[in-house]
Length: 227
Ligand SMILES: [Zn+2]
Image (cartoon, protein in one colour):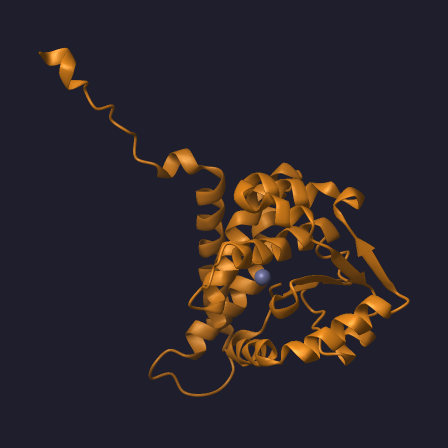
């Protein structure tokens, strides 16, 4: 979902995406057959489904049928190449949402909303130019869900969004032209955090205070009134 560390991880993700469909079919078979795997369907936990269906009514029928596989056995998931550091993944070639155990940090329904938005993006033909654009889509469209769930804006920023945006900004700093090699300095870490917080706050405002960003629409005078 998020928390991937900078570019190295992004490259790893691209590599994972290149794994053949056959390999994914085999992995999904293993997940489905594993004794610790719990299948979650719409009726078990409707909120994420309802939220995404209402947001994108054109694909609601497909979203309704989405199945989530939850497995708390992180060793097993890691062993078959499913990262668990973020709480969940959407496996694009398999159209599968997998929740790896991360209950304390990110509740299951929140992980499902985020991954389901990646699925929605695929269903709508979304073919974002970058991993970053795809993540922006999932993060920005899930903010409202977290607010409806009663999470404060501060918690949405710090607990949900910041780990990913922090790593994004850190990567930006590390890749700045002219910067030498080496890890982030203490100052750069602070800078990355401040940049990430600004980005999260802006996205939250755009998602929740939509009115504040829209220009007031001047009503066109009806020209027939002026005859
Ligand atoms: Zn994501």
